[in-house]
Image (cartoon, rainbow, N blue to C red; front, side, top):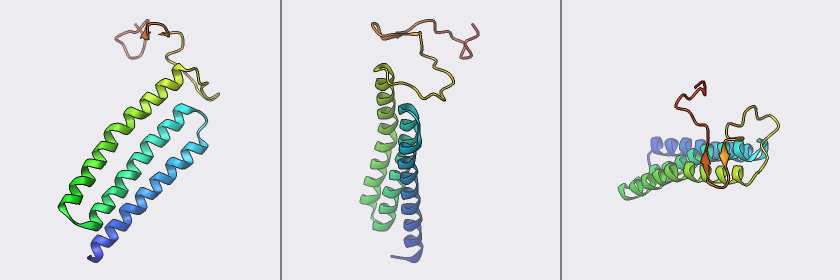
Length: 128
């Protein structure tokens, strides 16, 4: 293994570990489920993708690089969807928001029986 590949793999792996550590800290430090999901899904996905890239650089084989790319794409596609599903389920289950939450845009607009929003407007500012 050349020195350049070794240093590149080390930087990628260290960056990935740093992002996963930040995700773990976010899980502990954030006040409610929604912000914890945000911290963990973003940082952990990037961290895992960087570690997988480090493996691809270390092995230096096209077959492994292809698998690493596919694994990274799978993570980048599924992690946000899973985080959204868990956050939506927690909101619908009535898990309380943090005290610091400034606005709850779904409060009073979401019908639990029909699972539909009411009073939506085409204007994203809500002005009309």
